[in-house]
Length: 217
Image (cartoon, rainbow, N blue to C red; front, side, top):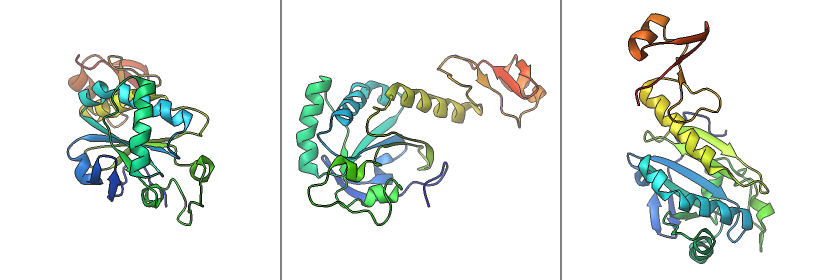
C-alpha cells in the first residue's frame, strides 16, 4: 500500500554521506523534505541537487531540513557532491541517503517490493525514484510529487507548497490556486460566515462556499 497524505512516514536507519541517521530522530521538531533520485552523476538530478543547495537559506527560514536519497553508495555521493557544488557554485550542505539495498525506496513506495538492481544498473532501473515528500514535525506526510526523469523538479513550487502547508496549518485556512505568501486565503467550509468574520475580519464572499480573507501580515 502506498503512502497517503497524513500517513506517518516510515522510520528507518540509513547511511548518508554525512554519517548514519535515524530518520524520525533526524527530523526532530522540524519540517522535512525528502527528495529522491534514481542515480548519481545524472544531468537532471545534478541541476536539482544544485537548486536545493542554492535554497539553503530559504529552507532554514522555514525550519525545514532537506535530505536527498539515491540508490548509489556514500562514496559515490561524496564524489557527486563535488560536481553538484561546482555546477551550482554553492555548498551542498544537506545529507544524501545511500539506498543501495533499495529499502528506503521500497518503504516510500517508489519501487515495488520485488525490485532489485542488476549489475551495472542504469537510471532506467530505478527511474520511479523521482519523488518529493514534504513531511511535518508530526512525522506525517503532508504532500508528495513525482516527476519523470526528463523533467526537472520546480523547487520554487516546492517552496510555495511548503509555505501553503505551513500557513494553512498555523491559521486553519486553505489556499486557492496559484496562491503565494501575502495573498488572500480561503475560509474552510466548516467555518460559518459569522465565525469567519469574528476570526479573520472582513470576508470576501465570491460564492456561498468560496470565501476569501486576508491574514495579518
